[in-house]
Length: 405
Image (cartoon, rainbow, N blue to C red):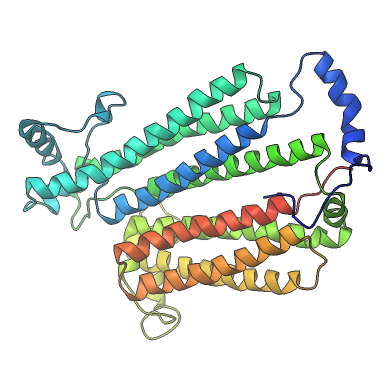
């Protein structure tokens, strides 16, 4: 995110301000045996793992879209790594699946070959999760033991690893909600995972991804500062007070993009994209009928008001997602126009333009997914687009950070 631009060079005869600032501290810390600068290889490792998290989010979306997530009814960390081998093993696994609501209510005519297809989607999703866990834990222990990380970075990577463990728990907690026998007792119930748990699972994945990206980017920046290779001209531009407001707006946009994606998680959890498949209208107008948005059907006796519609009514959830997406796209465009008036470093300018381009692509994917009634390819691309858009915002936020002089 803060790569040095080809047009910027630091002359060999000019002493780096950053080197002078950090030199005394670095020497003293080195004498005490402390690691003062994290090696860049740790950043590349974190970027690699962020790429794996991006991949598993896409695969998780495909698992949801192919209705494969409830095909494996047990959580066995070690023995679950091996898929069924013999025909007898497959029949045994299929019989387990038949005991749960999804088969009883939706898939009574499913064949063994059809079951194998959805099984492999969920198995692949879980295996990628296990692989990510290993690629975090084993290299992380190696880097820590060899002294490649500062104490701060070691704590940060430990925190990310702990989040990964929590993510695994959330995955199984989510699946359990779709296996509940209570679904068989509810009239008209659809056997699917809780939209709350699905959205929490997605939010945790996004948090892991964000943490990996920001820690990696900060490692590379700190290494450049310590070695005196960070361009002084760029630092001077970033420390310009004229960028303070723009910097705050970039953070606001990050929050908007994140929460828009989370409303998308609710849409996915409720299959809310399968209704009102037109744009920009929802039925006869831009807003659905009030009695449909605020239906008494979703109110429970203990509730005060009809707030539950916001989280459980497919019509309201889709309307919320549309509104959030439209607001985010509008504010992103305004931020891009505002950026044209500011003296931005080249890296920041590219990040802003990339983010604007990602907004256009994401809006196009979202509308297309809706009007074509959520085809798997478009829906998966739309979910990947949300993370790509968020990534461009991360780039912008980090590229705008002030540089200590």
